[in-house]
Structures are given as C-alpha cells and as structure tokens.
Image 1 (spheres, rainbow, N blue to C red):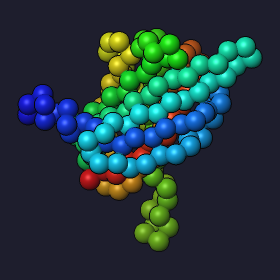
Image 2: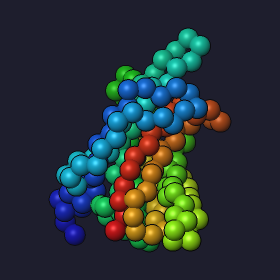
Image 3: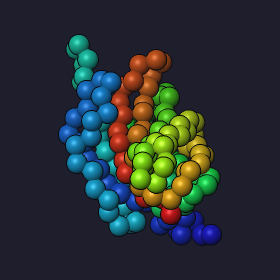
Image 4: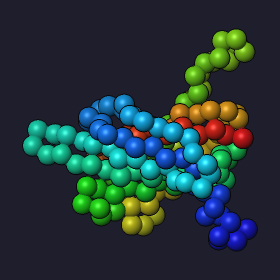
Length: 155
C-alpha cells in the first residue's frame, strides 16, 4: 500500500464540541461525513482558575475500521496550538445492547502510546461490524483533562 493510499484510508468523520467540563463526556454536534475527512473535536476543560481547550483528532487504519485488529491514532493539541506530549490517552469503544438480537452491550478499551509531537497510537480489536461510539479520554496523572466522543461504523 502506498503512503498516499494509507493516508486516504485513515480519515473519517468530523465532530465539533462547544465545551466539555472536567469529568464530562458530553459532546455537542457530531456528524458522519465522507471518508475523506478526519475526526476532529475541541474539548474544553475548566478549573478553579484555568480554562484550556484541547483539539483532539481521531483516525483509524483501515478506515472505516473493520472487525478484528485495527490501528488507531489520536492527535492532541493544547489551547496554545502546541502538541500535548505528556498525556495518558485511551479509547473506549461502546456498542449498546441489542435485546432483540439477544446481544449484551459491548465495550473495549485501547491504551495509546505517545509517538512524537502529540501523536498517540495503539492497536485494538473491533468486536463486530456496526455503529460504535468511541470516546477518547485524555489524562494527566490521575486527572482527566478532556474527552471527546466520536462515532464510527465498522465494516
């Protein structure tokens, strides 16, 4: 596969968040778009005396993700536009229960490792085809400083 094809396959949807308070994963406005776009969102964090906006971008390879093992990339930038290099980043994949099909809810957590310049990568399994909610959680130490929900449809 050429580098050009890999980049084309890795992008999916766009989401914009107007604000997220610490400990909240409430997203405002998410849309599924053609496979030519990346999942990008802004998460806002507030504290007693500080306010920071994180830009979170999520992509998968292949795109859309497939049943089985996939590679996931997340890019994190702080409010100053600089890459965040010292965070703990994880993804949680969630699919609601489908009682009519006798299927319980499904969850899968994927830890990502920092590669360089605010880029985090990890591999994980998507358990079945269909619509998944993917929540990116960004922590420093034990404190969550931002999160963002994306939607993907696995093939």
